[in-house]
Image (cartoon, rainbow, N blue to C red; front, side, top):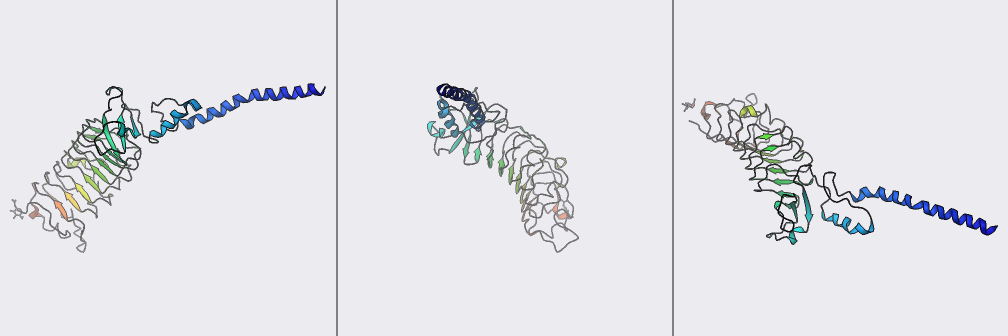
Length: 317
Ligand SMILES: *[C@@H]1O[C@H](CO)[C@@H](O)[C@H](O)[C@H]1NC(C)=O
């Protein structure tokens, strides 16, 4: 009788033991998303399974720099550590490289086209025949994409790059900037859009210190009224070689350098620089005003300069 009872207990234990594995499998499944942390929904990395056999592959994920902003646009980018040493890259060897991994690129084994070089959080994408802003790592602080063929800035291009301090897009074909492409970048200090085809200025975040949009086609109708009033940190406003026919006002108090040479400015108001009601007010910062090569006779506005530490450069006929 006793042995039969013991057998019963053993059977029960055995049944419980057999019932256990599905529960373990369930736990395993729940862990799966953790292995996928390094992949974004839009990133076509293999689907890693958390088993001992594939553990090595999971470890390889550490080669990819954590979470990058992979947009759903081809080509796809990934940043890898160490690859630069394997490929023959001329010195100095960049710490990280962004490699274009689009299928259209040269056969595997060849050094893939090095489009952007990352040095720390600076991205160098100069002279790479880019037609749009490439997907960039989220921690990008300095972006250089000069001498490309970018024609449009889309609102989504920088939307998730909250650490950008400088964007340099000198010498592209930019003629259109979506509203709010830059406005939400609350750490952006320098925006360089020189040598493009802009007819209007984009809205800027209040953090901006330097705006350089020289050598474009900007008209006064493309500058919103009081566009610079709230830009309290703006120190350098360079809009030379455009099609402006008036000086944008009001100018922020901290402005140090205003370059408007080679425009179509014919006239100004006596309050453009100074407050005619407040003769005690001196604009100590504004030492560099260039109005040369404009069809304006600066002698016609003798009351316009009393607050300036230095007269503007230009024609006093
Ligand atoms: C510029 O303005 C001054 C002061 O009114 C005047 O004497 C001078 O003739 C003007 N020059 C030209 C080229 O219009």
